[in-house]
Image (cartoon, rainbow, N blue to C red; front, side, top):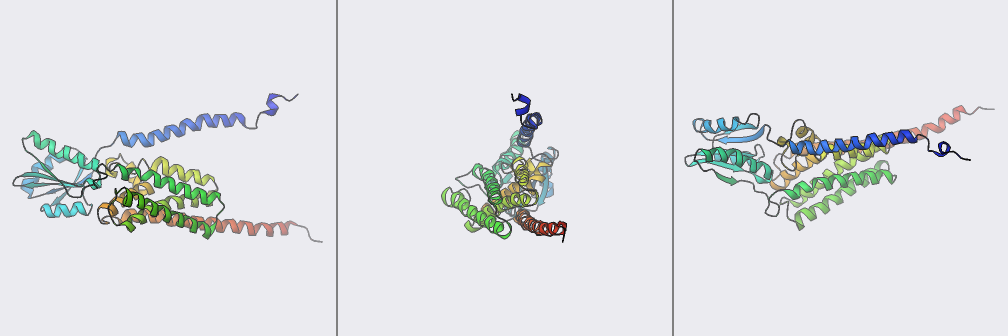
Length: 337
């Protein structure tokens, strides 16, 4: 008679314990990664301009600095300089002191949440003193996406597309240069399809079509390269590691729903080092600001893509070397005569 212990799979209790520990741990980590930034959203050294004579702007600066650590104040001589700074993405908005009273310049395209917050921070104190603040949206969000929901929603699909491409290339057995061609080709097609949907059909991004397609494609390649590259070096476990980092940290730390400066430290900084955050920032610059401040996030994505593709080639070279070395070792071990 076969006993229950004889038929029980080896390591059963340990696997059960691993499941009971790891699943709640992963769930808690995911909840923390997504809920913590959302629950602690607030301005932290948010770049904000103040324009006008120093004697006239002193009162405004005093009101803004009362929000300790909230704003990073940039001074400009007049409204024209402040507008240029907003269009260059140096600041998110500016308070211009005029003879008719304060005027608030915003850029809802840089983040509707930030624009709304600035209105509350500037208009509320002015209203308490009996003054009216005129608000001018210098770079407005597109009419078909006034709240930025569509741009925010594009971060997760691009990450998923990159993860899927990297996993498919790895599991299908593509190696070396063929894997690189597959990753680049898939990313280019994703970029074309995404631009066709977001720009041509929905009209939620309004910049240069080819540049937007390039951003979508580069964002996908950065993720797919990381997934396939880590898998080439570590095996299939690399797919899970890279995907976990992108999903658990890249997406919630991206700042796409608000701004990196609205996230608690160091989430905002980390998010801009990862592909989802860099792609969201780059897409805003290309779609709404004629490419202003695009160099940083573009370089971040390029580095991810280059390192990932390099790891794919390196992993294949190491694999080939191990295979070629194995027969040599076997021949040396076989006795002669």
